[in-house]
Image (cartoon, rainbow, N blue to C red):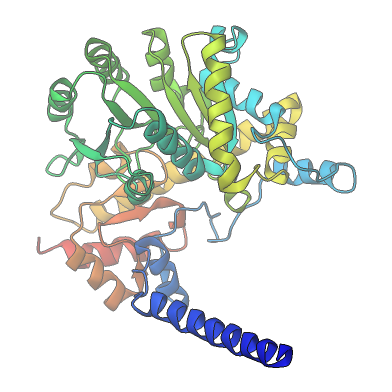
Length: 425
């Protein structure tokens, strides 16, 4: 009798297990492949192209004049100091204290009163993307009825980040297609018409994808109107130092808002300005009313991080903190980041000059008026398709050119191709 019961139990267990497997199979049966990321898809197509003339101006990563990835000398030296000398223990949930302190100095100023008064809640984040996502989740948890205003256009992943955090999105005017510059009047109207106390995502410098930044005077007007409306500015600062070559100049927008007494949020990334793309090292900071509020906000940011990734990676944080804490290495970094910015500015000039020498009927002033890694060319998706199909030149279909991929070796070829597809416009 006992043996029958045992056999019966085994049969039921096997049947139940098979049923669970079949049920699980049905659960996943209807899942379709996700659409390809438009930027990463460009790189995949470029790599598959066997043409010796192919050019990739789609990737948002710096290249030297031979089109090769770059590791900065200051990073090499920091890694030499790390190798075999430092442990790889877990960081606290909030990340590297040294890296955070140095990041705050870059964003808020070396002698910032807010740092001294401990009014800033800050945690290490998984680069700029992770900092934005952590803030979006914070916004949803503690201000569940709020929404975020995002510029048109913006980095595509901004929409994904706040969507997946379930924060409702609105948009505001930013780019003016006809002038290929800033639509300042419409931007100001949108700020004025937004409900009081709205959250706005602002690009601190080197707007992605347009390369169009407000002037200092325009930033002051924007800050004033934010103050009138009680809006909260959240700055995404992915290109500090990489835009103009001067980290202080590139932080000007943030400093203006601080001077005007705003509470702000800020996402920082070391992907571009230190070339630490794969290390995923960044910082999220929130300026609070006082030190007690800062302690509370930081504790909640850490709680949000805990189930996501527990604590951030250590290697990139060590690299950043070693560079920024050592005066000699920091001086070397400032020289190298200025060199990267200058090369890109030089390529903007070369591309514009080559197009003008070809007798293009179009104005290309916007190439040199814009700043940072990207040039918003004004080319149509159809023209971009022709560049790819006829000339093996790869970029996103919105016409965004990554100036980091332009070199003295390919700039004339690129200009000739652009002229060919735009001359009848």
